[in-house]
Image 1: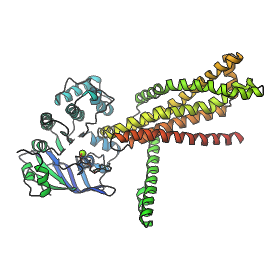
Image 2 (image 1 turned 45 degrees about the horizontal axis):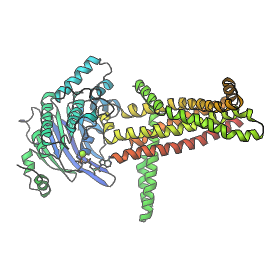
Image 3 (image 1 turned 180 degrees about the vertical axis):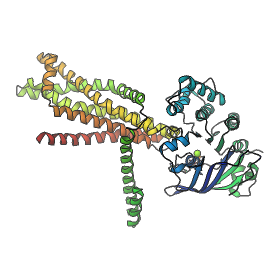
Image 4 (image 1 turned 90 degrees about the vertical axis):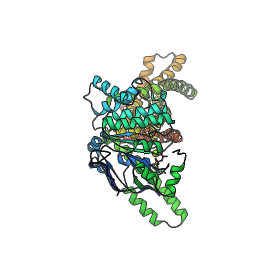
Amino acid sequence: METPKLEHLTNSNESVISITGLFKSFGELHVLKGIDLTVFKGENVAVLGKSGSGKSVLIKIIAGLLKPDQGEVIVLGKHIDKLQGRELDELRLRIGFSFQSSALYDSMSVYQNLAFPLTMNFKHLGSKEIKNAVMEALDAVGLPDKTDQMPSDLSGGQRKRIGVARTLILKPEIMLYDEPTSGLDPVTSSEINELINNVQKRYKTSSVIITHDLTCAKSTGNRTAMLLDGRFLKIGKFEEVFNTQDEQVKRFFSYNFIQ
Amino acid sequence: MRVKDCNSTMKMNTIGTKKVVFSKAVDNYLIGIDKAYRFTTRFFIEAFKKPFHFREVINQCFEVGLRSLALITVTGFIIGVVFTKQSRPSLEDFGATSWLPSLMGIALVKALGPLVTALICAGKVGSSIGAELGSMKVTEQIDAMEVSAINPYKYLVVTRVMATTITIPLLALYCSFIALYGSYTNVHAEESTGITLFYQSAFKSLSFLDLFTSLTKTIVFGFTIGIIGCYKGFNATQGTRGVGKAANQAVVLAMFLVFLEEIVIVQIANWIRYF
Ligand SMILES: Nc1ncnc2c1ncn2[C@@H]1O[C@H](COP(=O)(O)OP(=O)(O)OP(=O)(O)O)[C@@H](O)[C@H]1O
Ligand SMILES: [Mg+2]
């Protein structure tokens, strides 16, 4: 396992996510074949990989939505795949998940979307406290005036932001982003990248950013990991991964990359 | 775990591709039954655990009621009228038209009211639950609930199944009354029977066991429609086509099970009667 020096990136070598020997398959389809990954406190790790390579499966395992077939997944010091009930809920409140499809509750307004996780988990909160939390989260993603709109009235980029706001409202220690920029134009994409970096600073989160967008990986990741054939081919700084002399990696990077 | 074991033994026992295909189908079928069984039993575990989402149950009750009320009213009334009109000639042959209210009481309260209500609700409520949860599933909204430490089974399934189990018996009762009213309009036109007398003779023909059976039946129907809609929605596979499929399968399976339960419950009631 590679553990590059991180002192210049983060002020801690404490790991928040530690995965070793992770395998996952669906029937005959072997998706993950021996994943090792450590995410340190305060750092952003970008995971690159082509469509269908199992990126979403990987972070769903980290969030405990899917169970690994084999291997160890330790999140914030706990084996998330072995937790149940209350303990699992408590751990999940410390993890934020921004979904590929935003996953806003489409029967609820933006305000209700944000308030929902709070009212369901913290029954003692008054409406004023909830309102303050909602406004703070909306402010953090730069959309403070969208409270009354329905998700269907928002643009793709706005939906992504509201989705991030909904996870920020629980003040997570870890953020998992599934394709934060997919389907967005370059300007909106770079705004989202900025948002991810702002969240890292403002909320002191550690993040895993799943993407196939190279600009996104470059501008948000302190380290980049390249997922290929169910394994991490390379984990390191973006330039190191970029300069790897592997045919498949080269093909991945050569597409539409002007730099 | 159980399923995995039966999986591997089955695979070992088969030789030749045809047998393998067949055994795969059997496998999938058994896995499906096991999954549905667990999904259903989970309801009884989760329904009695805190937290209770009372307000959401009430919301869902209104959804179920309002969605099907108009259709049940119209259908119930028409069934009452038509059934009376159709039965009249046969009874006239015996000079027994005074039996019409009792006959209608039996036919509408015992059989048609519950069954028609269940079928309408399977169509309207079952499909909408299937489609709603199906689209929540494929757009990852159910996963989103789970990662924010909200139990989606409790919040979505338990509330909806409770709502159908409470509301569909009430709707069936309502349907029976409306159907009897439809029948009354016809009887009144021909024989000028008063409304009180009509309802009295209709209900006099029904024993406690009859009413109890009807109630049990509608509770079972309500539960079935809710749980099937939720099950199909929760297991919708990727994509918008999956949503339509979930809604469609929910209706077909719920209707099939409603008929099956009708037969079984009536049979049991008859046994009890003869004991
Ligand atoms: N629940 C599941 N059941 C069966 N197969 C699945 C499931 N989830 C994912 N897969 C399969 O695993 C593979 C990897 O899927 P995954 O969603 O992780 O891809 P991805 O890398 O996120 O791709 P994309 O960039 O398109 O989102 C796919 O072939 C998919 O069909
Ligand atoms: Mg994906």
